[in-house]
Length: 294
Length: 316
Image 1 (cartoon, chains in turn blue, yellow):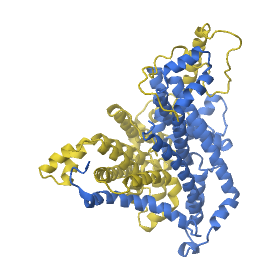
Image 2 (cartoon, rainbow over the protein chains, first blue to last red):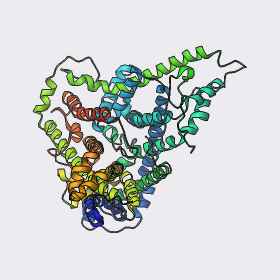
Image 3 (spheres, one colour):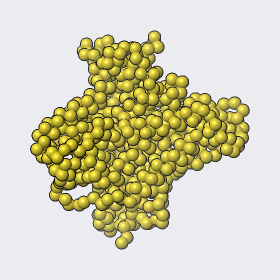
Image 4 (cartoon, each protein chain N blue to C red):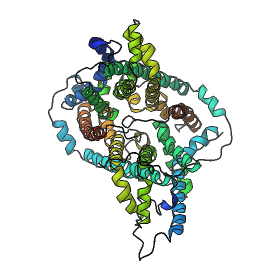
């Protein structure tokens, strides 16, 4: 069947699509490709190498892999993603969806509203709210716990940003699992319960097989977003002494603040590759189901 | 993965009855099978009560955890002498007047409006044109192209591409311009926008377009007068989503703009200090509230008007 009811024709279709494609090409595709080239040079923001950058081959990559700070940053990133995206957001999001299922009324609306609000407020605002919450001298948390002077951001920077990001992003997982749990037949759960299955057994044997696809979608997406989130930079800036310097902050600090653009581009390329793995896995999953999970 | 049962009349999450969890799932407390030959039915009331109590306690705790950081945003802006601790405010609206007097704070809202509005207009117009063309005309490799673009937009994030984007903007003379921010963020938003709008356009019948064509309308007229009104919900979704992501966006604006006169609220928020070098708490809290309000209102508008349909891969 011919869908071109307006008689657009192929040439006019190209004209219609071209502006968007050019913009995507220049500001999305080209930067990605250019990273590969920049990562092979000793390009710097200032100085001699800024005027006349030289191709140094894979020197940036070997330098990165040999850099203690990079390795520690990589390890911190793994902790951050695992702790806040997989355990924090997906775990809390599922627990909330499970606890709220079948509930209607005020309790559900209030809890969901608060969780959603933490998700939609602008990043800068929530970052400052957490700085205020965790402040050493007058922070609300210290006032509440009766621990005046506890410097959460200095003593536990990773824990702070992991809890922060859990708070920030749980809404997505909660909504996704709420939708997923609607597809689990209540009769199956009821049968399992009458047969004496405990909650954990019912979760494992009745719920999990039904929502496996959603879990995978959820973990992939929240990991990808968490891995690429720059918001916690406003809370710790990677400090103190690099103890919360996850990869995005490492790139910013070395490349844009430290001026080592070539080196930063090499690390950026590694980030791109990791993103690509996550995104390909997600798209594969999506294509298997064709419909978006939520 | 297992196929989902369709049309099961029991698939609604009805009143949960006694099926509440005794402990929050995922907690470390092991919930083994009940010891001995006790019937689970006989113990149902006890189990039920325990379940209700533990789930209520869990929900209260979660609500407190999520509300706690936000209390300050609700109290400090109205406090005559706000500190960093949450307290019952000594009520005043003077802080809101002070915002208007601060040139950076008020100006940054204007900058945010320019950048978010500009990007939203650009994204909606270009994505609608491209989506229409891709929806109606069979170009070889179209589906692959769309998938690749969508893939790229989630892979080439601001975090991953900040170095080349900064360098590109520098060479094109786009640093410290609104246009630079608008073009860079639009490039990232467009693939998902095209994808969403193409879905909407695929779903509209082509018969209206055929009739219009019979009466001699040009493709541009057909798009403007027939297709656009039909896919208005899609255009609104994309516009709101674009505004919200640029309004709240930080990284690109932070690296592309050095001049505080051009910086949007997201960046300026962190520069509001008193002469003494301390964060200006009355200003920051009030400003945060004003700056957050549009996003919250937009969210409420969209969710009440269209229901909250959100698409898996596009929150940035």
